[in-house]
Every structure is written in structure tokens, then in C-alpha cells.
Length: 503
Ligand code: ADP
Image (cartoon, rainbow, N blue to C red):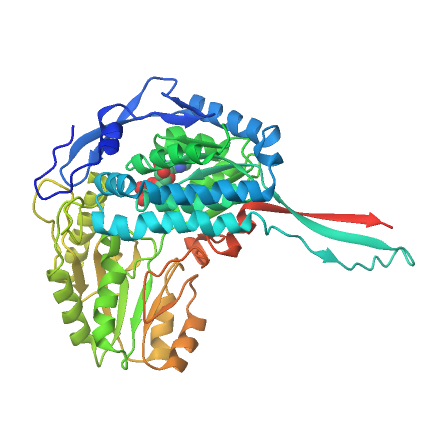
């Protein structure tokens, strides 16, 4: 049982259900335990205590799930359904997410540590929107009629067209930073396009994804179409990525594991899409409106405790406003209220796990030892949970680890620049990543010029962390392959077939 402090929201009775009994997995429409009987502990990161048990799937369970997804794709009613019918089911998932919004928000906050206010305002409604945006695509997966010449068949007449068809069985492996939303990003388009799925949830945060599995059943997703398993990366994730009956693998997580996914996918050359790390530049020009820029730059890094692949973790500020911006962001950080996610007043919760806590505090130590200085934060927060104070590092050199590597915590490096064209663009792009970026300026010409020069999949101008189901998201360079969301994601989940008819 999970102890809840007085100020924290009272848990919904349905939330208790996930905590009080070992959680099962959804395979072929059945709620099952792992074949091995093994389970693992799920932690509350705010208290470092065990709150639930989840099934530790391995290769045998993955095999069962893949076979179910294969059968559902090859024989099942799902692929024979009309696009409108499929679209209605995907839409209904979005409706039901909102019907169960409080249960989902509480599970998310408890399991991941994020503030309940954020889970309610962002994670849950964004997940719902995603399904409903994708539901619309189910009826719009059109091909083209193509006029062809065929020079070696003079005089012949042709009717040629393309069809967009589902890829087949999709393996999907997701991380813990937005557990429900990451599941939605992957399941929404896969289902709208008529695929079947085996998804592995992150071992740190399995709860909301299991609730989503229940919701999908209630929405009418047929047995075997979506199989949701829980377990660890090597035991349960790797067998999905390597499985010969899986046609496509979609992964979100670290760049390091992304490489392992590519290796594992080689066997049957399954299609691969990857959404990986980032070290995104957030750039403040001399003419920026600082009243908006300072909280904007702070939220760019501190939102979700910096556990965002798109986090604005390298802040570049023009020398003329550097001191003002750094002091402003540090002041903002000082006033952030740290606490357990379930306290409605909490603005920043704990990091997700002890591993993540050790990693982030390790970076703080390495930064200090290499000569960086914390203008604010730089140490762990109070209590037994995995709290780290929001941190602004100054006196940072471009070759330091804290500047080069993805920290995935509430830690921003602040650097000064003087020249936009000769200096800043080179430094902003001098990273192996290319996921996101921010620009703060009142000069619209400079904003567009800079936006074109940054080598990243997303550029936010005078805003940051703006996500929408209709906007494609993904990375240049080592930040990934392919795009999620928007119309672009349909390329990940459909094959294009050319049909040529001799008339
Ligand atoms: P993080 O470092 O942020 O925890 P990871 O990339 O390690 O991110 O994990 C993201 C997801 O990838 C999780 O669901 C994890 O279980 C899974 N995973 C980890 N290692 C592997 C692997 N070798 N093969 C497949 N999936 C993996």
C-alpha cells in the first residue's frame, strides 16, 4: 500500500486496483501473468517506496504477444474493418481517456513523479487529442493516380495508382518520461493505419499504459490487435526488436539503446523509426522580450524536471543581456516548489528513478569538477525521494560533459555569445543531436533566418515545448529516424504499393 501525505490528492478507488494487486499484461485480449511467474517492483519516486508489482515479461511472453498480433493482422476482423469503423474505435479511445482522466492523471503522477497539475493539464488531454487527430486519418489514407509513360511500350495505355497499406505487426518500445503520451504517440497512428501492435511499456512506469490497454479493450479494439507487455529492456524489449514476425519497430528512448534496436532489427530488416536524445539549443537574442523569455527559457528546461528529449538544455544568451537572463532564470528556479507529484501545489516532482537520480547528480559532480559553477541548485533536494534542485550552470566550456551530453534532468548550461552568424549558429549546431531548438527575439527576419539554419527537427520561436498532434516531431542527426505525429507519422505505419494496369 502506498502512504499518501495529508496534502496529497485522495486516490481514486480505481487507482487502488492497480496498486493493491499485481498488475497483469494484455496479450491476445486476455489479462495474463508472465509465463515465468516473475514480477518486478514499481516505485513511487517521491518516497523511494514500492507501490505496485508488474509482470516481468521475457522472450516467451513476447512470442505469445507477437503471434497474437500476427494472427490479428493476417486473419482478424481488424484489417477487414472499414476505415470509418476503425476510425470510430480510435476516436473512442480518445473519449474514454477523458472519461478516465483523473485515474490516468493520478497513476501518471504516482508512477512517474510528475506534478498532478501537469498530468491533468498536459499528459492526459494531449494523449486524448492524439488518438482523435489520428482517428481522422483512418479515412484519409489515399494513394495517387499516376500518369505513366513506359517508353519501351509505345502506344500502350495504362491505369496506375498507389495504395497505402498497413505495415503489419508493429513492435513499439516506449520510455518513462511521458508514459501515457508516448504510448498514445505510437498507438494512435499504428491503429489508425490498420496495423496490429506489441508494445512494451517502460519498466519504471507501467501503470498508465496498462490502464490505457483496458481503455482500448473498452473502446472495441479486437483481441490481439494491441498487446501491452511490461518488463525490462534486454528481456522483453530486445526480443520484440529482433522478432522475425515483427514488420516494424518504433522506439523512443536513449540514443545508446536506439543503436541496439537498429542492430536487432537487422535480422529480418524490419522498418525502424527512432525518437532519441537531444541537447537542444535555446537561443536568446539581444532584442528578446525578456519578460517572456526568462520564464520561457526556464520552462524550456525545467518542464517535466528536464526529463524531455526536447529540453532546452543549452541556453545561449547574447552577451548584452546574459547577466539579466541568467539571473532571471536562476530566480525562477529558486521559486519552483519541489514536492511529491500528488501534492496539487507541487511544481516540480522527483526524478523518475534512483538510476536517473544517480545519473543527474553524477553530471552535477562532473560539471563542478570540470570548473562549471551552479548559479542556483546544483544539489539534491530534501527528502527520501529522487529530488534534484533545478540548476543553472555557468562558467561552462563547450568541451565539458555537462555541455555535450544529454543530462535528462533539470540542469541547463548557460553560455554567452556575441556574434550570431559567425559564432552562434556553429555552436548551436555543434552537437551530435538535432531534435529541437528555441529562438527568442522580436526581429521576425532574424527568427526565420535562424530557424532555417538550425539543424533540428523542431524550432520554437518565442515559445518552447509546444506540442500538438498535428505537428511532426523528430530528429536530425543522432536524434532519430522518421517523424512522430502530424501527417508525416503515417509514413512510419504504411507501406506504399504501386499498382499498374494494362488497359
Ligand atoms: P532511459 O535511459 O531513458 O531509461 P532507455 O533507452 O534505456 O531509456 O529505455 C527506453 C525503453 O527502451 C524502455 O522501455 C527500456 O526498457 C527499453 N530498452 C532498454 N534496453 C533495451 C534493449 N536492449 N532492447 C530493447 N529495448 C530496450
